[in-house]
Image (cartoon, rainbow, N blue to C red):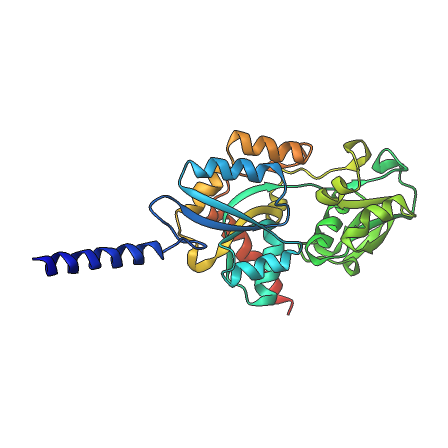
Amino acid sequence: MKNRLLVAAVGLIAALSLSACGGASSGSSTAANTKVVIGVDDGAEEHWTLLKNKLKGQGIDLEVKNFTDGAQINTATQQGQVDINLFQHLKYLSQFNVNSNGTLVPVGATAVYPLALYSEKFKSVEELPADAEVAIPNNPTNQARALLNLQTAGLLQLKDGGNSLSTPAEITSSKIKVVPVDSNQTVNALKGTTDAAVVNNTQAQKGGLGDEKIIFKEDLNSESLAPYINGFVVKADRKDDPTWKKIVDAYHSPEVEASVTKLNDGNLQFKADWTAAKLQEVLTAEEEAIKKTK
């Protein structure tokens, strides 16, 4: 009898020991919560704390991992070092997938942000002089968008109306001189020798550019801006995990949206109604367009 009790006790201790070794890791779940690591480039912002607290009540332990480079975030997601990321629009994602043989897909939309035309010398597009110098970002994901923006403003014309892959070489007529610069230098160009500059929302914030210096802004409800909708991104083989919907829904809660809106001075349009399937259609079209140029 004593021997049977001893064996049972040893078995119980062994079972407890094995159980204690089974800690949660990235993307794993326990009876208490599911740990999710998200890769971002603005991890210190208030909305991440709000999102983490909101998700705790839904059994999700969100760890925010900050990076300084978008390509690193996507690579980390592709390699499984992070479970999900949020920092990019579909156009940027399409470039990564095609150029790096990536298999990343969107699982929910956040918002579209403006790529506005700023000037410190002039108050309107009409005031720009003939052959005014206008700086635009030279990176592939924003250069075409900037050119389309200038075309809509009536400052130039692109071959066949342009598209999301247009370059300055496809300008057929222009009232201005387009000056491509590094996206991080658009504000410096504006404060330097150029008459105006197309600046993304992040750089405008960093450079202290207020709305009063915008002389042309895109219609954020335009369907033509679909490739520039930002979204949550995961590896394709994990796209059906129900955890992602909880994260997307929590992001679009009133508290989190209010924080994101404040951070961006209201310069954004949320796209909560865009489903993962609808986002994937846009992404696939962008990827196919890039492949045709190779």
